[in-house]
Image (tube, rainbow, N blue to C red; front, side, top):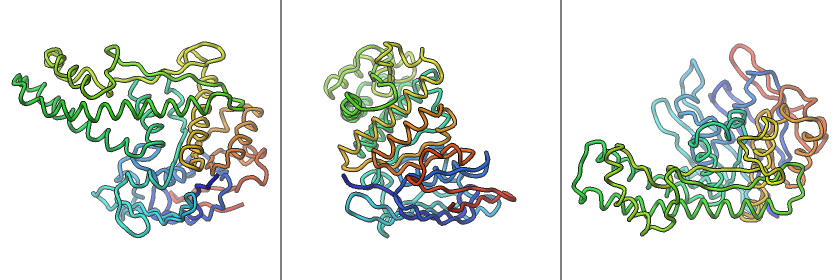
Length: 367
């Protein structure tokens, strides 16, 4: 089994950090400090070495340290399987984020080919009881972890759908305006559906028979309008046939953008939304661990895990079980908590870092 871990991380004018330099050694990283000290910002910095907007989904402008407003820069040295990569992610005021890999400019999607990063943050605790949009986002991040090209399919679909929706809102009825856009949506949409199905199959395989202290989830996909065509030709026909109804609604009513992710606690036979708060959290942790196990086999190394405040919501037995599973997996997990006692069960299996804040500036030190 290969390794995937950061062995160096530097932050410059990122969030509350003026400057920080860390030298992780590949073990799990336990980060403790008071609320608001800047613990989550460290995890967010790591998440910026993956495609997208990071674990807080913040705009690049919002990550700039104030009041200097000089722009921010993150650099990292990543061991990925048998290779070592130098990563850089930066943004200047008023500009989009830029990425460099081994000194060369690269698209964000290229990060997904050298790194795999998964995260669990407190805002996800209500995933199963809030709207479908958050679950689709969770589903697509899982899918992206296996298939970096999934982002390209999603972008192509969204672009074509925006154009089609504009025609629908303007009540354009001439079918010639729609044909090319619907062909693009159908092609990209079929790829999205195939990618999602593949990801759920890999998760199911990693869940079956796994030795874990967390409940095994059963995942499923559903569509707001019933069954979703899973091939390009059928989806293209469905879009054409649904045009009249879409004109009345002023938007596209069929497609992968209306899919929902469902989950059941297999042993109890209950839907995740009907489980208790603690059970829902346990299901989420189980999913992240299953995703990590599946990636270990599919990619060749377990992913980097970002687990924000995860220990605070678990009893002592579950907390110890989580640490044991993370260490058995061999993943570099970055975990945060308010006090070092939350990580006592890790012992010398983890590096411990303490974050403090004074005068609006965060600092991190090894313990």
